[in-house]
Image (cartoon, rainbow, N blue to C red; front, side, top):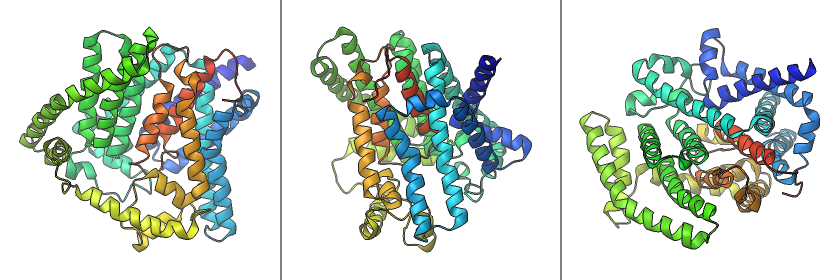
Amino acid sequence: MLKRFSRYFSYLIIGILFLQITDTYKLLLLVFQKKTNVASILTLMICLFFLAFNFSIVKKFLKIRLLFSWFLLIWFFPVTISLIHFLLGNLDGGETIYWLSFFSLFGTLFISSVYVFYKFGSTYFVFVFFLLAYLSIVLSFVLESINYDLFRSILSLSAETEDIAFVRTESNRSIGFYVQSNMAARALCFFSIFLYFSYFSSRKFLHKLVFFITTIALILLTGSRTSLLIFVTIALYFSFYYKQHEQKKSIVIQGLLPSVVLILFFIPIFYLFLKYVSIMLTNYEYSFLSERLDFLISFFESNDSSISDESIEIRIMVINQYLGYIYDSLLLGYGPVKREEFLRLGNFTAASQNQYLEDIFAFGLFYFLFYLKVIVKSIKIKSFYTFGLPMFPFFIFFFVILIFGFSVNYLLINRIVIISMGAFLGIFLRYQQNFRYDI
């Protein structure tokens, strides 16, 4: 009876993780007319009970140095630093409870994801999970084009989004269930990389090509240049890396050099493709997407350093504003609330869109340095390269996180990143012959 309960409880957690990583839980909230905070509280309570029920395994996980380090970054340090700021008077009681609950939610989602994918993480299960997540984004784009009022309703579910202008109406950038175009693009990037290397990389060339073009087209609909460039570059490079990995030949000769040659060959083709898509978007009145692509095209067309995008100019100004305040509170930062206050008061023109600046500003320099140490170690661990599951690049995820850090505010309070990271680490542990506590 207890084993059956444990199994069904695990199935419930799998469902919760799927709803959270795809943001499709918002559809359930629409049905029951509830706000997102209700779903967050319920999710936190269920995950806490699940982890308590499986405490013996969870305790074993947390003895593994790498996993414990990520848990410190996701939960322990943010909670501890927030409590310090409460004692210093930088947070009131309500704000403190909110942020402690918020960080606890992501901590429990992370450990729950590790456990679920450690227990069920066969190649088939992992592929199906992320394939369904990928298809949910496709479905959301289709629904968005048919009935955008549904997505207006989703915006009203959260106090953080109900006052947001309906960006897609003005810009024609697809937002999906995430109600934010860049978030949808990052989800596509993570899910598609996962699917490509766990399944499509071992399939026929035509299958790879169809999947590759489909993903590029979907990312283009979001208008996110960062996700597009990351997906194209990483997919090309690691396609060659895994080819040489199977042959056990030199990474430099069989991996790096052919990849560089292919990328150089791909640039003019990619340029012509972007030009064609840009013209087509203009003809069909998707002018904003066309303008975003035209700026990307400008990297290929001119060496003039004066070429810039207005968003980049603003970002540089904002970075300077952040640095001015960071120097005054370098050790502990200002806590998780101060940024919103500075934005409201006009101290910051906009959010930095840079995780590293946001981490230092909110949690201090020590947190930032520890984050860099952990992510670099995650990329370099040899076990990630010699992992037993064929064609599965766990280290690529941490490499992509490192790059994305330059274009997003907070990755470690992002459901897509947290649950995917837990999945990667859970599968990695599943395929280790013995737990190594020093990794």
